[in-house]
Each structure stands twice: as structure tokens, then as C-alpha cells.
Length: 309
Length: 315
Image 1 (cartoon, each protein chain N blue to C red):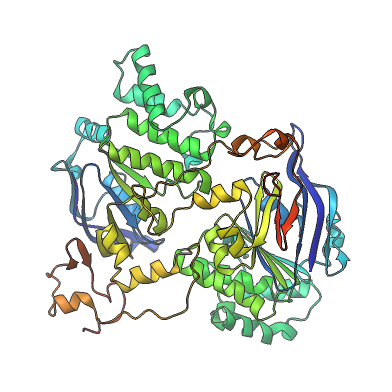
Image 2 (cartoon, helix red, strand yellow; image 1 turned 180 degrees about the vertical axis):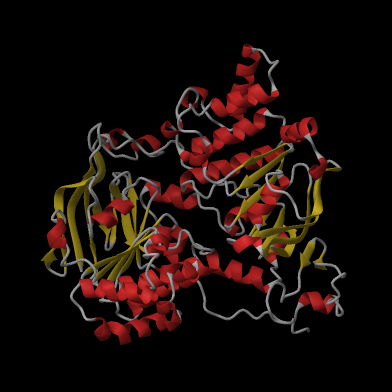
């Protein structure tokens, strides 16, 4: 449904924009209906830029993003509005998404003004109630309230309800639960799981590996703008192959397992074992190490030459 | 050795006092790293701040804190100055922005120690040794804060805060803004300070139980301005007695857990308003075990050696 092919983004930085900063380099992956893909990376890995490019909030420098077969870069006016009917985003900080001067349910009213001007009052109220029920919010507790009267979890769920009012097929969830408390974040995660069961595709962007793992069918690990490893979640988490993925996994604090100081043994570069002449820039970016498991060269993004096998 | 007795700190607001910290009593042994966990608004940062500096909105209502046999003059801002930095030190929540952007770091440290009446050359050698301990190069002293990464700034603030070997160090959410790999380095460095006897004891405030599990000896859980439970780290994680702790720990997603295999559940409801705080157990409304007696506030009592709980069902 959503397909990224060789997507790159270069920002101009420095005085007079003389320097190039490659935020995203040659990223390709796919998102199918009813599938959750988690995009995991540390700060500066380009994960949010990818989410913004998918939502057309930022343009791509090269590569194409297609949604239902159509290149989204070519969408204009009506076609773009139709795209937003199907693809919506929810972002990290629910408090700054709302205008504190207006009541929080204004975000729902604005959807009606832009997309459903012909829907009658009674019909609209039913739709709002259905959307709120889908995110387990009690309409009496959240409608007609100002943002400061609601909790972070309620505001975040209200934003998801806003997206559900449109008949969306794709939700870009950028760090949606990082700001929430442990006791409420699991509810938002379960909500995303329920939406996925209903056929929604979710791009779950996070820096937290344990959260990504809970939902995702597919996992994409990003480092400095490039994909270092991707594949089925069970494969990537069960048999992490790239040294970066392994470092990340070993650094995650876990309950019941203390950090160890043992150096990770990386072994020979799996990419170059499979593609011995893979220094060719035209070669595949990722080598298949399993059925649904791909890994990049171990030296990708570093200044050293890959040590070969 | 820190001893806190029935500490009460309220926030002034136009609509009455917020009872953010209400009758907190605990002690911290020498060499102990205590993780202080709880959700936003539970009073964990208020507790940390009360032990070093009350800001303008905070009012000390009652109770005392004693450090190594000396009473901390919590309510007296001027007299607390003697203790700050030397006896009690803090790594603030936003250490990233705690460094003066207009000074080279070395000069800032010099001004800071000289403001405490200490000549900089006498601590210079120690400063270099500590930088090495947290894995920073001496060159950072010549740099401006903007030239350092978030993790480097965080470690720099750690070195400055502990330079005078405080007896008590309060680390407030020091790793929450960092990436996982940097987080590990910073948290390990924090534990290293205790291991090298540079600080006597430490309170690590965080919302992340799995992080303090890595470095803390004991964990204390707070809920809505009250203590819920304190015990050794392993006990809190494997045999918690307070229903809030139990629910909180079971709501944590772990690497390897998936929604279709083992669906986790959150805690329904939200914490009560503390303006004013409700009577009785503050977790009552969300607690699956609540019964009549919970209308009365349960005391925070030791139910096993080293394990204190505030719940009628636990004792």
C-alpha cells in the first residue's frame, strides 16, 4: 500500500546553506494494510523525517513514495486532500498539538469543516461518538473541555480519534507514547493493536525498542539516515545481526536482566560474506540473511572500510 | 546517612495548596543508591528539590531531614547554602541547559568553585581525574557547551555536581532525554561515582523502573504525594506488595513481549487531584483490592526487614 523506494533527504545547513546534511539516505521499505512497521532509531537517525516525508510535510530530495500506486509527490489540491483522508499522523507532544485558547474538541470540528461540510449535526455527533468509543474515551469527559483539563493520554487518544473520523488507512504515529506515563502508555499501544486488527496500517516511529517490539510485524532499524537492518520483528529481535542493532538491544534497560559489560563479538561482515564485491555502489543496499531479514554492511555510516570476512 | 521524617511540602496556588509531598518518611543508608520512581505528578521531583532548594512556589509545611546527624534547614534558603554543593548536590532534570552557554566550560567551573570560597587550582587535578572517569577528554574544559553532545553535557554536569564529594547526590531524570546507548553510559558512570566513594549516597529520580533496576540498590515508589513502597531492587521487581507497584510493573512492555502473545494492561483511571488531596488511601479509586478500611490512610510500615509498604492488604 505504502512503498518507499530509495528515499533520501538532504538538508542544507550552515551559513548560506553551503553544507549538505544527509538526514535520510536511500531508504526503502513497504507497509501493507493491517501491518505495523516500527521504525526504530536514536536521535538524528532520520526517523521523524521519514514520517514527515510520508505525510508530505517535508519534500523528498530523491526517491519516490507511493501510496496505493500513486506517487504522493505529484498530488495536488483535491488529490492531496483525498490522500489526507486516508493517511494521517499523530505526533509526540499532545500538549503542543492543541491550541490552548480553544477547546480540545475543536480538532474534531475542524475535520468536519474541511472534509465533511455536508454531514448533518446528528449524523456528525454519532460519528464523533463512534470514533471516541474506538479509542475508549468517554465523550462526556473529553468533549467541551480545554486541553489543560485533559491528561496527556486523553489528548493523545483524542488525536487518534480525530484521525479515525477520516476513513484512514495509514497512521503515522511518531513517538506517540514517549510522553505518557507507564500506566497509560500501554493503553495507547493496545489501542493501536486493535486498530491494526481492523485493517489499519501503522508506521510506529520510536526510539524505544521494547515499545516497537510489542506491536510491530516488521521492524526497521535506522542509523544516521540509513537502514542497517530490517525484517520480520521476530527475526530482527530474535537474531539481531548488525552490530548496531546488537548494541542497541544490549543497552536497553530490562527488568530482571542487568547490563553486562561483555564486548559483543561482531564476527565477519554478513553483508560482504553474501556480496563479496558489494563495494559496488549499484549493488543491493541490504543483503538477505533470512527469509524476511535484511542487513546492511557492518561498516555502513562509519568512516572505516569494512574489514571484509 | 539521610533521614527524612514526615516531610510535607505544598505548592502555593490561587485555588489553595497542592499537597504535593505529604508526610514522607524514609532513610537512606551510606553507599545506598535509591531509585525513586513514580508517574508524573507523584511528587518525586518535589521530594528531590525539597532536599536541596525549595523554589518560590514551594512551602515547607512540616517535617525534617537529617543528613549525617545534621538537620538540613530546608525552609531557610540562606542557611541551606552552606550545604548545597558541599553536602547535598543535584544533577537537575534539564542538565542539558544547566550549563552557561556564554562561558567556556573550564571557566564556568572555576567561577563556580570560587564562588564557594575554594581556589580552583586545588581541585583542578581532581577535576581532570573525574573527567577521565566518565570518559570525557580534558579538552572539553576549553569548549563551549554548544560544542558538546547531550550525553557529554550530561556527564559534564555530573562531574561538576560531584566535585566536592557531596554526601547526598540527587539525580533528577538524568537519562530520560538521552538515547539508549548514551543512557547506559551515563547511568553506569553514575553508579561508578558511588563505587569510587565520590558520593556517599544517591537518590536517582526517574519514571523508568527498568533503568533504576540496573543501578539502584533499593527502589522507592511514590504515588500522589505519598510513599507507596520501598524495598531492595530485586524485591520490588519480583515480589512487590503494594497493588500500585504490582500494576505498574506488570504494565511495562519488555523486549520480547507482544500484544498477541501476552496483552499487557494499564492501570485504569488517573491519579487524584492533590488540591486538596482526598482522604484515605490515595490509590483507592484505581485499586482492584480496595475495601472499606481504605477510607483510612494506611501507614507506611516495615512489613519485612528492609521492605516498607503503605497498604492495608500488605501488612
